[in-house]
Length: 127
Image 1 (cartoon, rainbow, N blue to C red):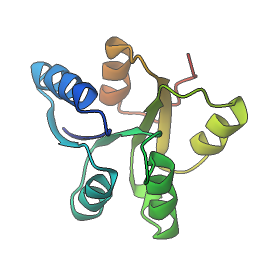
Image 2: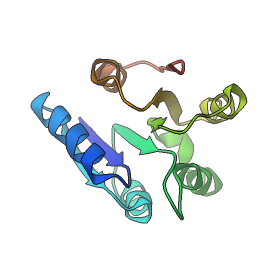
Image 3: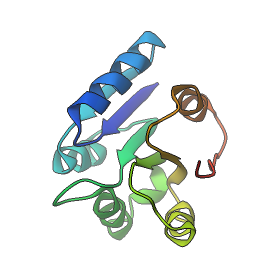
Image 4: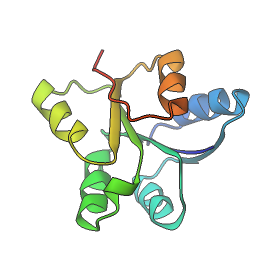
């Protein structure tokens, strides 16, 4: 299994990367969303952990770019953020093919691990 972690906060990506490594899951980190988008376009990932709230180019921008380029449906993206979203905003994202779940920060690592290793379509309700 190969996971991409895209978040502008290095402390979060480091923690998530170490957690996944400890579970035996290969992962790549992108602290720059443009680099993350580039990796998504060039490589295949089993799961993409995507922070929604990043300055200048957000996770929502990544999702919209992938959707515009018809690449979104081929992804398994789990979005997360510390920012409060409305139920409507979350539902709009979750209805997009390729977006499989939503978790709020701080992330429950057990719940995240269950989402990553689940082989079936998964929508996680917001906390």
